[in-house]
Length: 468
Image (tube, rainbow, N blue to C red; front, side):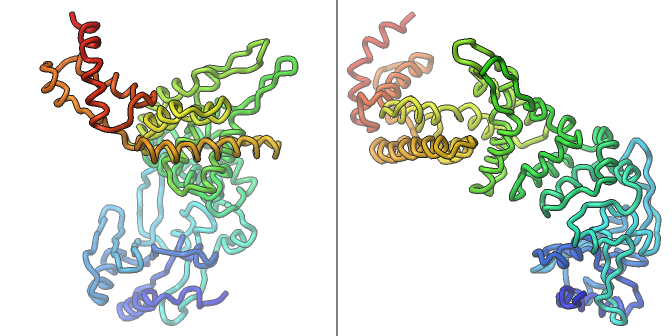
């Protein structure tokens, strides 16, 4: 092993503090793993054989780093430099109660500390003391598992996952992030203990889910969740997408398989979590709207609107932010609109209505619609993409002319009330809606003077029809 992988200046500085104070200190876990994999690192965890926070105070003093954050209850302390977040942990032994993933902790030696870690690839330590600087301690063959691209637990898998059930999600997330496989016994233990996830806070589970969605190929993690029975617990509505029904010659594709492909397609072109989450749920209502019609086959009418409604309760259960829930709901509600335009023909009025409805979401909406093409027929894919290209071109032309991307009524409510002598009420909304429809139909341009003139032309008729 090349010691050059562990030559960060901060390690040598902290090592000198360790030598001066007679303290045994090791860099551990993710830092060692990622340096061996030549992955970028921004966090370094240290195990201190002794008092972790007390040693951290000496490091903070000697290196003139502040502030120091101490978590005395957990025996940890944290410092930040310009390049790294540094966490110092007292070497410890953990014991768990069956109804909690929060351990009882007591001090221990390095081997015991490494044994409590989730996976062998995270049970690696490197000495930073001068006498054996850079020496790798690998009691559970974690480096071998790195080379073999395996996720394996240091101890019996059932115990590892029973003690801390969040490790079921972490195992899947690491496999997805690193492109590794679950070692067979580890996979069995994970599946056997999956029900223990119910004692883990939703926020921690969702955090791991989001990390999976942010991987380069989220389908790896999502498929593992499904195969190990975790998806049915964490994402029951997505697990329900599995299955293919066939009646006569009519067969619909497996919606789960399709969904995972769409998420990967989005991930290939968009780094943002919000669109990846929307892609995961864009067809969530298909099982509830599935219907067979002898003349045309399988249909899923209304799955866009129902899916948007379902997303409200799903997002609340997952503890997603209100902003993310609203975003997903709108994308789901609108995701069929560009497809319909591409298939049925493009009129200026239809383009205006889509731009008006989508607003700033239009680019993400088109990205999802392109990703939604998962046919294995290259000619069909090429035809659909060409149709979308025509829709996008027409959108650019209409947008340049009508400026509907961030539509605001050219005649506002207060002006309508002032000019027409109206009190606040439904009639003001009726007049604003009429102006909006005239613009979307192309009867008038999206300009104040034209809209004002139109209002004056139709006001008597609208007021007459809507007066009590």
